[in-house]
Image (tube, rainbow, N blue to C red; front, side):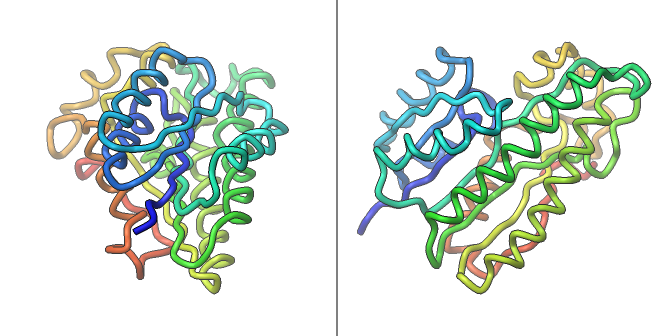
Length: 243
């Protein structure tokens, strides 16, 4: 049987890396990263050890014009695309909206919304009946993240609306589109936003009284990509410990 090919953006750490490693026994992988070359190499080595053919694609998605180049590189190394995990994203320092700068907001929107929309569009051109797209949102889309990351929450809310529209658009072609809403997950993204203690501080507020792990989100992503979810589209799955 021909192995399926999965493209994962933001695969050098966190949820993207966990998804790559768990997918490796059953998929060939195209793994995207921007700046974390060490993390990307570690993820790729682990995925290869688990059985995947792996290609690595470096692209700065803060420039949406680079999305086409990402897929040109993909086409040179892969003949098919069966799944997309639209995972690349950022947070910034916790801040009130009144203190946002245009540069912060434009970068947030470019990486978390504009580029994922363009990535999904490029992926859809290469997909056929049975393929699937999973967009990675956040529970912040439900809460708004006041005093912290309202701009981040807004981009994730926009990504969920986009997921709904794209799911309806692609359903007649047999291509499924869903989204995942991770809650408080123990990944490096919190430290990158300048709040490395956020997970420990918020864990007691979660009904399950703990943060989630990247692997727990990855398992949900892989189920949505799989044939076991063949009748699942246009939906958002919370992976948030009840929060």
